[in-house]
Length: 489
Image (cartoon, rainbow, N blue to C red):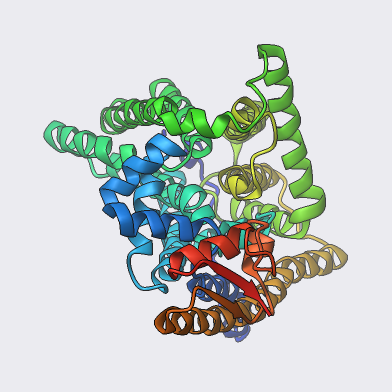
């Protein structure tokens, strides 16, 4: 958290020449990077009750919000924050879940932008506002592309609330810590911020063990870096918040672990492995997830992130990179090792509680970590290139241009395809709701409804609406609308 050591040199990047192509470049950026985020927000807004959402809604109507949280804590899950938010949302209009997920994407986008801005000021970038917007947007697009199953992560509320909402809380907390360190707060202001951190983190850390374990390890690492590298003024501002957050996150994890519902849920999986098997599985799942991201899921987007970060480091870093060059292997090693620890922290919870991979929705925080690590390594590479600046050849420029178009172009294409699916799902959902409400109003005990053209329940939670009244979605629909049986025609 120390200001950039390379600022004591005379090297400065030459200002970017204004030309007639700049409006076209901005138009291309908006289409390729901003538009995918906006389309994803629109898609998420079409989310409605699916799968487990109906169970939350049924218990909420019967027990009320707090009674439902108590029910789930004792019967199924200790994730008290996700139980509360899921329960409260299901009592509102059916569209509330969709707007909640759309808002979550906005908060992550804003938080990433804010965090990038604080880092830009810390490192002394030129044009920090512009660069932080560009960097934050590309980071967000890369995260979206890196989700193994976007339907059960951003378009299914139960999955998104448990694993995406806490990421929004963590990113904005980190940005706030950096913001506070540059405000020169008084001891009273710092104390007040630390006190407010405790309830905030108790909420953020109460959504899922995977994100909470990741957050605890992150706070330990940041506190250690703060003690080792930050100057006295920044240390006094940041360390109380990090310690308060660490204590609150630890308490939250204990609350989740102590829940009777946690034991009930865990009993449906194999017993927790011995220490050697636990470590082996954690390492295996961590490496498999990382390799999958780079090889199968988002190779183009991650390459774009690396290239952009390298360009930012080369073009806008303040200084000639002497300090970075002298410590290059420590920086690369520290960034990569930290990333591995954080990703492993998330997957360790799945290895311990389920002896298997986390569900794809649980990959959200690890994927975000991978994106940040790639960006950091790209930035360091760009700073190192400043020591021997040279103009890239025409062929290399063409390759870069293809990469910069390919990554976001694929995300844009994918998000448009998802829109068609989510629009079809949303229309069918309301049509089925009308049929079930009409059957209940007539006093019927059972109903046959039309099928989904695109069934979100199939791709998100593997419980589609079908012709068997005893399967998950059919049974939950019948209970929710006061019927005995629901099937498809």
